[in-house]
Image (spheres, rainbow, N blue to C red):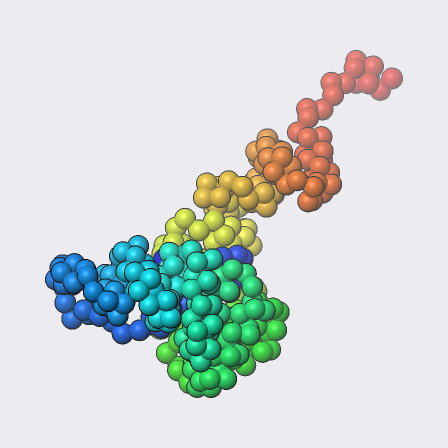
Length: 357
């Protein structure tokens, strides 16, 4: 978790990869009150430095102050001092856990958030944030338990419904995820991440109109615009609208130009349009951003073959074969043998063969 305001994925889809999705802004909001928020960063830093001594609560306040200045290592140092002075200080454990999560130190974050709940099992935000961390760790089933506990304590928490939907989606329960995203949006129609999640579920279910409506709302809310354009592009592809898909992928890549997956998706849409050379350019860009992607080599090989570049196609298949391990070896070898045979010059005919005898 690197930002106080962005949701962190796993194109997991996550996802995947689609690297887990989680909401750092929720975690930060859960840390407590915003100390020194009215001061400029320089004034706030001077204020906290002047108060660098004191008891556990003072150290906790300093931790929150440094966190508010995005100085997370210093915030962690002060939360740690607060805990040393008062080992039962739940807010200090929680603040430190959130800071660790923002730094993507998920093990330490999990330990601190678990300690909060060991000391006080009624802290809703600790369940919420531990569930978030568990999602990032690729443990959606464990996250579900925490998010159920959060909702048992606060049944009107829209963020908890949205996160539980993420967890249900991670376990393959699309219907449960759809219901929770919808409940989250009924409670808070401004949740861009809930529109994003529901759009992904609807896309997976084949509800293309519903998915496109959700991705459009995601864009309207200003939440992860590149991902929203990507979702719209995939929906257009499934509707057989490659030109519209290319437009959406192009907008996504304008925002995040080094995304290999989106380069490859636009390449596929360009192939569907008949733009073979544009597809080759996109597959080449995808490989520049992620040279280890063997599928991109195979797909570029197909595009190069269609463009008449047999040597280039052969080179791509050879690279795919070297990178692919055991997966797909047979199909790649068969295609490679075919292209090698096609690329060989025809054997010279003998005089006798020219004469017919």
